[in-house]
Image (cartoon, rainbow, N blue to C red):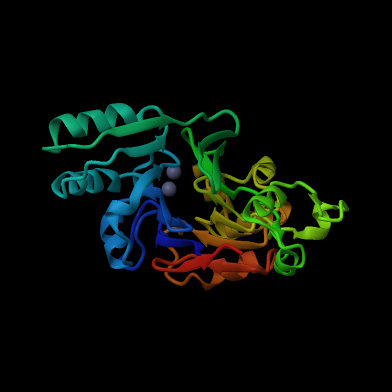
Length: 304
Ligand SMILES: [Zn+2]
Ligand SMILES: [Zn+2]
C-alpha cells in the first residue's frame, strides 16, 4: 500500500519549459489528494498517469496564481467529463467568489458541487479526517494569507502475534477483543496480558507541505519529527535579500527548517526561473541537512 507524493510542478511564479508551476499529488493508500493546482496541472496529472476522477479533495496553499490557475481548467474538464461527485476545495475564503464567477459565467453544464472549506490563517487546525489520516493546516508567513498542510497517518492498533492464535485456539471474537487492547483469559483461567499477545504497529507516518513562506523558526513547530518535508527553496543564499523582500525562503533556510523540525527527509521545490542548473540549490541545502532531494516534475518520493 503506497504512501507517497508526486511532484507535478516544481517552478515558482514563472514556469520554464521543464518546470511547471506548483502542484503535487499525495497518494495515501490509494486515496489521492491534490496539493496546489498551478497552471497545467490537469495535463501533468494525465502525463504521470493519475486519474482525474480519483481526486475529490484539493488543498490550495494561497491565492497567488502559480498555486491555483490550473483549478479552472481542471473544473472545466470535470464538467466536460460529466463529473457528478462533489469536489472539496480547501483554500482562503476569497476563492469562493472567484469559483462562483467561473462556474456561473465560464463553465457550462456543471453537474457537481464545489464545496469550499475556508482555511484559517491564524493557528493550526484539523481540516480533514478519515479512518487513515488527519490533515491539518497551519499558518505560513508570506505576502498574503498562506497555509501549509500536514498529512498525518493515524496510529494503528497493535498487531496480534500469529503464533498466539493457534497456541490459545483464539476465536474471531477473541481476536477482535485482543486487537481492541484487552487481555485474554485462557481456558485455565489465566490472565494473559495484551502486551504478551500483540506487537506494536509501525509508527504512523507524516508528510508536511510548506509553500510559500519566508523563514520563521516557528514553522518547524507545526510538524515535529515529520517523515518527509516539502519546503520551498525559491532562492539561493546569495539572493537572500530577494527572498526576504518577496517573503520566500532560500535552500539554506529550507534545510534549517527541516533540521529544527527533526524531519527524516526534505524535498526542495518552487525554484526561481533564474536558476537553470539546480545543483547549487541541492548542495546548499545538503550542507545543513544531508537527506535532501531536488523535487522535479514527475518525481515520486515515498513517505517512510
Ligand atoms: Zn508561489
Ligand atoms: Zn506566493
